[in-house]
Length: 249
Image (cartoon, rainbow, N blue to C red):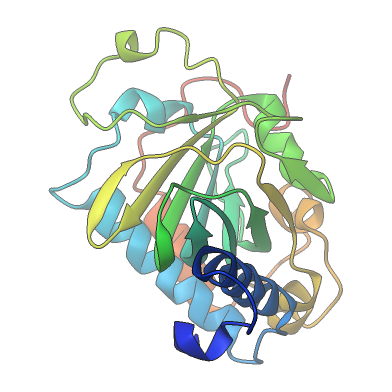
């Protein structure tokens, strides 16, 4: 639970400085806090619900051509952002990738932290969806850390579900990002943020030490837990991949 802003303000600073320090302190505390034992399963269930609401419902805004290019999908529910002009963010989520035959992997647990999602004062929580469309972008999930806008290129996703490929002729970025805050689903920017493996969550959920590469690409999870299978079933409802699998290229 995030404490009220006034309880976090250090004495002896101007109000803007105190607010900025409080914002940073909250995000750093959230990043350092260990995940509870029940959080991994809850995170998978929440990711599955967000996916169903935003990609399979009547209000979907993601164009089908982008879905057909998506090799991996990451969902970060409830990412916390704290800002005063500039800000910081942190959250935990899951990613899944599809192979050459179109089958989806079990989810691997990830963290995201770094840059602000926008300019504001105070705190908010947003849901993030990242669509990894290039082979390079997909395989970056096997790395210990991913720098968005650095090692992989990122852009705000188009928000017209009827848009043709001409909205972005080549879909030539590695990753496309969407965010939802206060019920609004839209394109966003996350330059400078980093994604990394949530090792403890992966171990707690699967009962052994596994890296994202082993879960997403190597088929090390033979019997996914029930909520993981439910998420994989939802992902199978996406349009088929228009191109080679994520291990190619």
